[in-house]
Every structure is written in C-alpha cells, then in structure tokens.
Image (cartoon, rainbow, N blue to C red; front, side, top):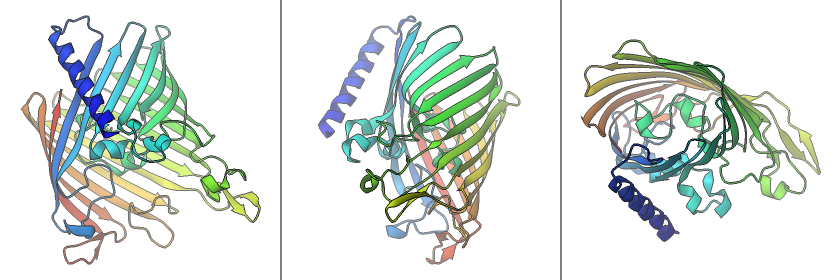
Length: 388
C-alpha cells in the first residue's frame, strides 16, 4: 500500500512537470496546486514531553517540538461545462483531516486515506451547478489547508464541526450577490460509502460582494443510523438521534489593510435509541452538543507582514463532547481561547507564522509545569507554509 501511495505521488509530480513544461498556455484547463507545511510548538506553562505533554484539544497543530503538517497536491480540471478536483493529502494533518476515510479498508490505512476531496461538477445552466463526490465542508470559517487560514492553529468550532461530506449538492446563483446550495449527503465524515443507512441534508444561503460575504449554513440528519436487531452486533446497543447544526460565517475587508470576520455556531443532537432486553426503545433525556462564537481581526502593516487575532468562546452542554473542555458534574463546560498570529511573507509562496495562544477553561483540564491540575494553557508555535 505504501508503494501504491508513493506511485500516486510520483505520477502527480510527473504530471506537474509536464504541465509546467507546456509553456503554461492561458487556455489550459488542467491545473496543479498545493502546499507543504511544518511547525515547532511548545507550552510556556505546561509539560512538553512524555505522555503528559499538554495541548488544546483542537485539530492539527497540537504536537510537541518540531512537527510535520501535511503535503497537499490538488489536480483540477475546469471545462466549460464539466470539471473535477482531486485533492490528496499526506502527513499528520492530512491523516487527521480524513479520519473517516479508511472505512472501506476496515479502518486500516488504504489508498482512500490520502483523499481529502474527490468530486466532479456539471454546470447544467447559467445559474445551476451540480457536484457529486467528496468535498470539504461548507460550514464554519476555517478550512483544512493552512493556506486558507490566517491562524495556524484551529478553533474549537472548526475542530468539532464537519470536515468533509460525500454526496450530491446543487448550487443556484440567484443573482449577482445571492446564492443557494442544497445537498443530500452521507453522515458527516463518512466519506467512502454509506453502511449506516441514513442520510444528512445540508443547505447554505450566501450573500457576497467584492469586499467579502455572509453565509448561513444548515445541517440536519442522523449521523449513526437507526438501531436494527439484525445489526446490533455491528453498531452497538445504542444510537444517537438527529443532529442539527446552524452556522453563521461572515467576513469583510473594512479598509485596504483591515479585515474582520465572525463565526457563530450551534450544534445539538437529540436522544436516539437504546436496546432494552430484546426490544429497541427511544432514549429519553435532553439533547446534547455545543455552541460557540469567534471573532477574527487582521491588520496588514505592509505587503510582507500582517498581524491577526482570533478570540473564541466555546461551550459544551449535557456532555456533548468528551475530553475537549473541562466539564462539571452536569456535563457542562466552556473555554475562552485567544490566538495572536503574524503572517510574514519571506517569498511570494513561503509564509512564516509565529503564534501565541491562551486557552482558559471554566473547569480544570490541563496540567501545569508542576503536574498539578490547571484550567489554562499558554503555548507558542512557529509554522512555515509553502504554497504553489
């Protein structure tokens, strides 16, 4: 399997060489792009080694010392009516992003474990586009690739919202500024095939201008299917109910040098079903989940350097997430996280990102340098991101 993955990389790199060698004509429909990233991370008030090293329970940038991000290679074909995107990822960040993909191989590493996106689209008319395949989520402010984020570390809302979907979606361009998306998809992050037997609905209403845009995103569906006496051994003796998430994302250039963004989300899952004796019954109790809000502010001091801050409040209720924030006896807890990042362009395609981050919990969650319980963590990282 490793040889197969290496072959894919060599084929793509060969393709990249051939494409670049063809004088990069303006009417070429095929493009190759991507990125490579790595980072150094350390805690300022907590252990950095052994099994007790500390980190926020957010995605990607949470390993101690010098660490790898991912290599990302994207092949895209854009025709007049049809096109495709094949987005492949390698490395720790890539593996975390596609954690739901190895299902076909029994959760063992397979070739699909390197597929971040794989979809085709058809422009059926001037205002309608259909897309089928695996595509990154439309919810939230942040994205998987570090080239699409100002901060290198990620927010709690991004980390526990969807990463990817597999399904069919239709995009409607209602006017120059307004658009609508509707989709039917597998359960969240079930990217290869649907063995669960339930589907998720998605939608987005967007308003965009040259200065930015506002997006209202919706998701609704059963993420682990209904219990069935014939499949109890495969799916366990309980299941979740329907998950509903509403998400607002917006961002605008306030001036030529100042940008402001906002992300707010609410996610709840209703009680599902339980096996009681030889019968399946509806579960009782309240729903559980999380909600949060984050603000983003960026200032470009020159063409080569920008400074940005992210402030996020994230709250879990009724035990909606385990091992993410410190929880009280009722299963409630919250965190306020502030991240200050710089973006320094060494070259047009190489960016250095120094970053300081403070996570403050309502309950103890971390360990301090004396290995005592603590509710806050201060960390520093320096990342390098190369894009092509």
